Length: 72
Image (cartoon, rainbow, N blue to C red):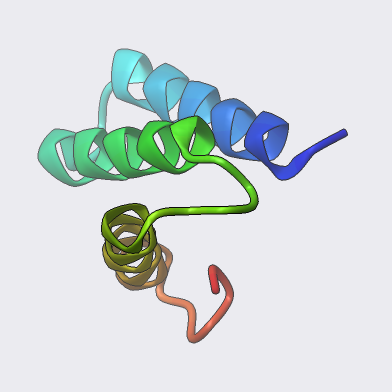
């Protein structure tokens, strides 16, 4: 299983949490978008723009999940 599968599963899980209610919807939506963006990027041979986008998304996910360097 490639890492994109894990990103998409996490996005799906967060989407289910949004539908269930009781969460900070805007933060969850941002995390879902970041995970989907990461899943759409190639795992190798990224362009400089794609690398920058991935780094930004990874930092946002670390902030969302309260982790340090988990998503890097």
